[in-house]
Figure (cartoon, rainbow over the protein chains, first blue to last red):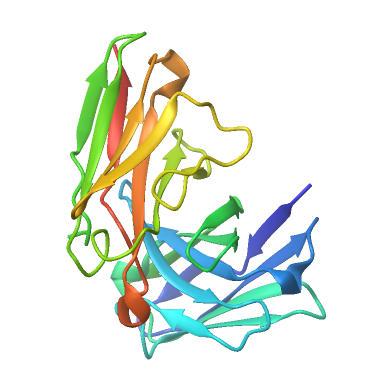
Amino acid sequence: EVQLVESGGGLVQRGGSLRLSCAASGFTFSNHAMSWVRQAPGKGLEWVSVISGRGGSMYHADSVKGRFTISRDNSKNTLFLQMNSLRAEDTAVYYCAQCDTMMVMINWGRGTLVTVSS
Amino acid sequence: QSALTQPASVSGSPGQSITISCTGTSSDVGGYNYVSWYQQHPGKVPQLIIYDVTKRPSGVSSRFSGSKSGNTASLTISGLQAEDEADYHCCSYAGTSTFMVFGGGTKLTVL
């Protein structure tokens, strides 16, 4: 059974940093691209970042480019999202997702809440 | 403002069919066959129900179907059931610069 467990969320001041983690199990982690998707309270989904299975390709949404960096450690089956220069509009639940191709998110974690105070 | 446009809400009675539209541009929906749909029940995690415009993952009911015409993708749910009441989100590949965009989501109410 695929399991994705996010951690690292919390309350942070505007301009601060956080590092999210996503521990994966139940599948061959290095064979799959992984994504981060966020959802602000009461809002729709917003794609944030994706990284290829071996980590050689990464893409980020324009709204986070230059501030967020996706990475992975295949030896530890863990996905990361380094978030710097946080803004109030970054407040959201952050989901990690296992991808089939880089464009299809087939399994999702339960999410971790990030709250940026102004 | 989301990159893809969905109606905020749709409704239907049990047994009926409904269609949710997802309108983008030639740079996303119209340019690639990489549209996916996600179902999200209140307080729950999103679940993939359609990918590559028309494909259904194993285990997803055949009552869900996807299509595309020009810059608009559509999700059709036939034989509406109470359990279908949820939010539905469309998503499209948008090239290597933007990569992925979501719609604003549509709340489906089963009357």
